[in-house]
Length: 506
Ligand code: XMP
View 1 (tube, helix red, strand yellow):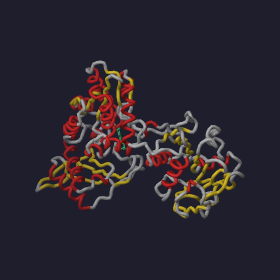
View 2 (cartoon, helix red, strand yellow; view 1 turned 60 degrees about the horizontal axis):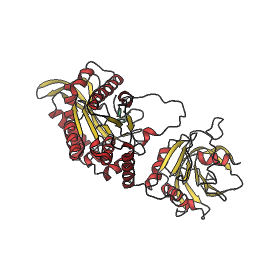
View 3 (tube, protein in one colour; view 1 turned 30 degrees about the vertical axis):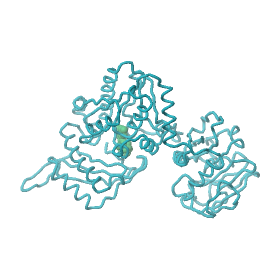
View 4 (cartoon, helix red, strand yellow; view 1 turned 90 degrees about the horizontal axis):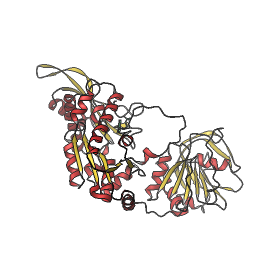
């Protein structure tokens, strides 16, 4: 495997994803918590950082067990760090070194650049630059403004590059990463969905033995793939609980339950809608709504789980981005929205926790799901928030409003599918606004609700842009909703990106 030491760069996860695209396993660790470097570690990558190596509190790492012993690649800050700590000099750049640049290879022998074009576009993002390299370092590539675009250390498999090969705009960046992990480090490319399934199943078998496991299914990709993996490992010892909180999409509870059953899963469907509605009555504050929905879910789940005899484990669909310990640069980040739907569940239930997907990125979860035969309808579903329509009905949630929104949302989503747009969009949904407005239908005045449509493109939900629909599509959906859903007389489209807006309205 490859170890990536994180100095807090916004691109660190991207490095890991690039490495894994070549079916090579890698792990991200904070720079100040280097894991055991045993024989399974074939190479190390040092990430970029928002810090400057000249800062007094710049992240420092002791590489005595790594440098010169294992292949080592420093990217941006990582490269500057290697240079600075070995007798080179790093200074603030005279010219701004951000964005596109052309890198020219000056040493054709270097294996890091093997099979790359002599000149190619790369992406720069740094305020510092290496002005002098240590004596035993050698420049292997340069740009017009950056002489030390890349270096190698004589007699070692140590390399540094001042651009970012992991970003999409570095055209041959992926090839360079492949050169490092496959050719220089000698990693075998056997981290595939099939090998992951095989390994996980055998690990789960030995960890869980004959123990009983309970898992909460949500209809989303993560919990579904976790369920299939566990099912393959322990069969009937896995019981899944799927709770209808009354805040799902139209007919979703029945449809999803049915597809789970046809996959052979042992799943209990619990209709707890009324309990959720009752507790949400009169509540308008978004955070309070989230907390109530989370708490009732835990109570309902706990009640059901207690009916299963001798259950020892709680399985969760946690994925890698939730697990990676982030290197905090500006102190703990502010809570924008509390997303932890079921935080507190394991503590309350007094069960051991098993998280079979904790090493996977979202796209890898999808690939594993495909390998396990999860139907496309679940596999490619847009993300849906745990509190469901509860946070898409602004203000108080009532069963009547849920029904109204379900109808409008269903017309919208169905319309996306029919127009072939569903898979082009990362997430879409309808939002019921807490205002009424005047309209006219026939000869009658109406005074009804407004629905906002939201559709965004994104890769991880952290940033997002609104989707540019053809006007005809919006016109059709608006017409359909207003004509078919009694109680809605106005439709608007949300054209805000994230940031500064968020994807959900609450
Ligand atoms: P925001 O609104 O923060 O949403 O831009 C980013 C992504 O997170 C989802 N989301 C949630 N997911 N529980 C969840 O499981 C929540 O409380 C929650 N709030 C937002 C949202 O749907 C989007 O995909």
